[in-house]
Picture (cartoon, rainbow, N blue to C red):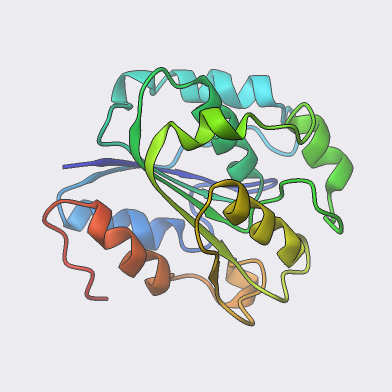
Length: 192
């Protein structure tokens, strides 16, 4: 069975959007699902988030799957850069990777220590990647999803009119993600 980490974004928390729903579905199937609470917006920095994640480092192995939303995607990219081994999959939802317009461009850039990523290293750290983005995200333009998918050498999973894939856009459940995630999990029924 896999351990799945779910990373929230700026101003976020483990109980918002589709995170509780996904955690429940995964745990019902016998997987471990961890949704760390990162300091945000006060105290939000790459270092403070890495300090929180460090508490879970013994749970990360070759069967681990990461799912990240918004700023959590930048954090996931930085985690992958630092990992000493492969993980099973990394999934990015509404990722800001430096293509303007990004509503919180300055804050995201400062958080990530810039938008320069070691793409070759990142691509070598997961067996599978998925990138979800929409055409009407009010915070992060579609060009970000397109760039991330291109850098990872995978097709973009485009979902029209999905906004920021948050509760405001109606995403308290995310069946499309669960269906795509299913093949990366052992003994998992993606029926929603």
